[in-house]
Length: 161
Ligand SMILES: [Fe+2]
Image (cartoon, rainbow, N blue to C red; front, side):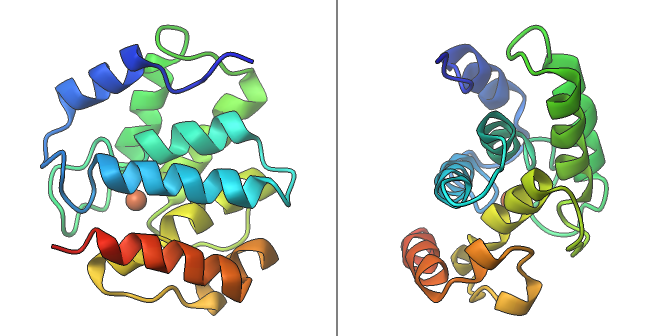
């Protein structure tokens, strides 16, 4: 199978990312979200291409590291603009990716399983900003597993500077 996160895609993301590449919403966060998502996808029906693309795109259009309520919507538009150039998804998966990006910072819980896994993957990386993930704010049973939370938390706090 073709890998979905290519060198060309990450080059593009790095070129346009407005914030610190090594910051709390930068590349190491994206990489951990991807790992979280792929692990959650092993026990669910989540679409792994969508989960991986979400990891690398969802925060890519942030303009600050604090309150930026439209960064998810911008990420969804950006995903659409890169589709067909730097990655390929079918229509259903592209729509899931856009929904996941658009709603990821609104505290939502109810969605397609792929979208839920995207959101959980991101929430499981909150340790980097000093927050232990709250099982009640995770969408899926897979993410609420204490072992999953601990695994993700331990990796996320290493990123604290
Ligand atoms: Fe994020």
